[in-house]
Length: 66
Image (tube, rainbow, N blue to C red; front, top):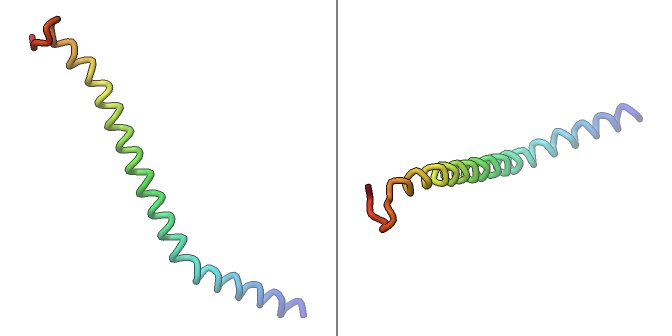
């Protein structure tokens, strides 16, 4: 009887993997894609913030370029 329960449990585990694997793969790809977009946006903001003070140093009191 124990062998039948083990086989049924293994079969249900394999079936669950076959059923839910495509959805899990899609979810993982979407999460990784969102993470990459957020990271790229953050890097762009950091770069813009770092370059902004340099641009303002080349301007005189009247706002004219030097």
